[in-house]
Image 1 (spheres, rainbow, N blue to C red):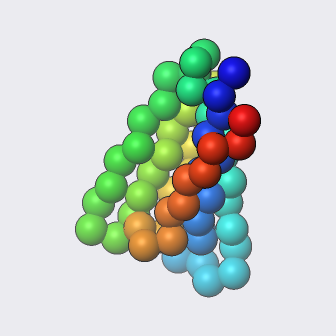
Image 2: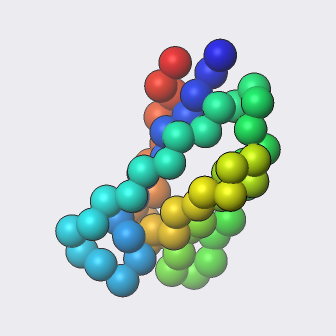
Image 3: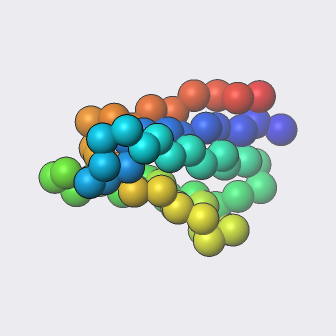
Length: 62
């Protein structure tokens, strides 16, 4: 089972970090970008994060 962790600074805030965990094999997820915002949505669970575009990071967790 492979999971990705997405994180970044909350849009409109300076010191608030948001995180979202996605199971690549079982979840349907989408990453969208605008000029200022990146949004990662786990469509299987309905969870999402909106972060400042230049702060979005992703890493393989397992």
